[in-house]
Amino acid sequence: MNIILLGPPGAGKGTQASRLVEDRGMVQLSTGDMLRAAVKAQTPVGLKAKAVMEAGELVSDEIVSGIIGEALDGLPAETGVIFDGYPRTEAQAHSLDAILADRGRSLDHVIELEVDEDALVERITGRFTCASCGEGYHDTFKTPKIADTCDRCGAHEFKRRPDDNEETVRTRMAEYRAKTAPILPIYEARGIVSRVDGMADMGEVTKAIAAILDGGKG
Image (cartoon, rainbow, N blue to C red; front, side, top):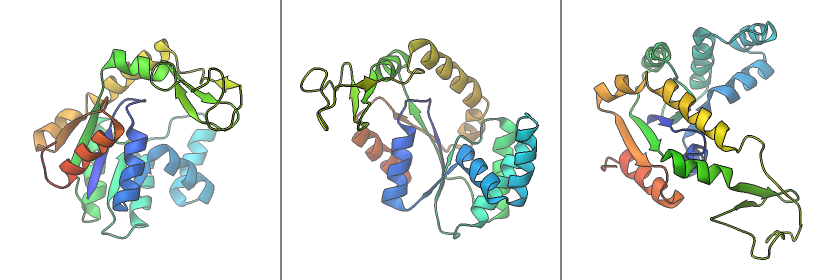
């Protein structure tokens, strides 16, 4: 089974992808991670990508396609794949079709985690972590049991990610919509797009995705 998981930053895509990896033995192909791995391993495509990046240029669709092809060639044919961060353009969507077809694969599902933008802003801007052990908290949904004291390790220092602010979150949402808008109609036309409420409890989202993959209605 080959799927694309879509959703804006903060929608919980990473959590759901890791659960699919754990529960179903699927492999998550994240273009950013693969690019770094290919450069480090000095594969033919990795060397091309390195030269382009060192010249300060953007990596072309052709190189990204090559890296995805290399990754798929290294997997057993029966291994399911989750595409993360790719495709982002119409051209990449058509490239992916060709890459999969060349390897006797096809795309089974495109699952989008839908979010309410205002609720997502609240979810992300309220996040903070213990500076000592990394335990996660939230201003509204999960505050320390004792004020200013980590439940797990008892430390008193907390930190927030500088990009967890409203302006950044709304910019990321706009970018996400701009990037996914061109590819969704391609897959809508094939009838393989399903939408899941990304604001629901993580366990509910996992169940909804499982129902889609197992042939139920999500």
